[in-house]
Amino acid sequence: MIEIAKLQQIASQVRRDIVRQVGAAKSGHPGGSLGCADLFTVLYFHIMEHQPNFSMSGKGEDMFFLSNGHISPVWYSTLARAGYFEVDELSTFRQLNSRLQGHPATHEGLPGIRVASGSLGQGLSVAIGAALAKKMDGDDKHVFTLMGDGELQEGQIWEAAMFAAHNKVDNLIGIVDWNGQQIDGSNDDVLSLGDLVGKWETFGWKVMQMDGHNMSDMISTINLAKEEKGKGVPTVILMKTVMGQGVDYMMGTHAWHGKAPNEEQIATAMNQLEETLGDYKIS
Image (tube, rainbow, N blue to C red; front, side, top):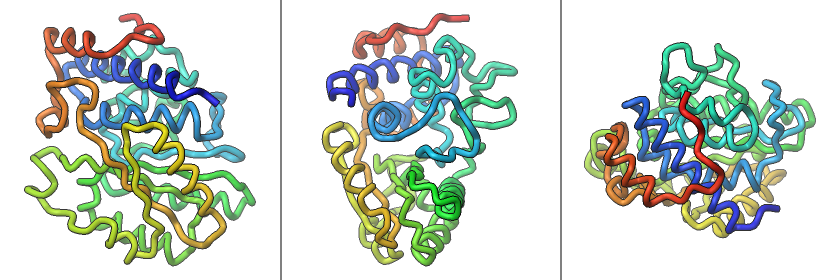
């Protein structure tokens, strides 16, 4: 197992990658990506059993589905750093004919991506299907999916939540990025989510909470969630994060949901984020 200090170093490099990708493309979604860098690092470098020698079936390994696909920069960086494809390919983010599109897609065959995502509300349904397929195949591994909190305003999420509870999809772990922000403002201002714990419990899910920037807490919480498999109840983890975590001028505001930093702002961010694995080369 990788030590916490090493995981933190990887997360710092992932955050550098995020800022550089979005900055070079002059478009993208840095806020949520930065906020979820710790989670992706913990999942791919500590928790999940997965193979960079990628297969679409995912048989015999844990599977991950990104529902809020606009935070693709954090996923691309993590996949590259975990060996799914060459790190230097990150320099092609959002370029014409790149495999690294603004939202993850499958038609170019990018390793690690099993479904196109970003049409919000759909990821949980896909993850449930994958989890049921594992049950049918006698595969004892888990399926993880990440949703945004603003995404919970989509009705399909709650249809899927009912279905998962009814069908006892207990090899599924849903994670909600609970940062309180969405594209047009705070969740409370746009459309309040109310009592999220109570809602998920009422829909028949086991509910846990964790600090999305405390890796020890994340590891212990996710491992507890994995222990729920076999009990007949799906699990959701409400993960408290700060949008833009790691870059002071982006933190805690929806302003950086989908806004690219300029060259001066990129330099400021680079000064705040430690380079630990080496930056990718610009093609």
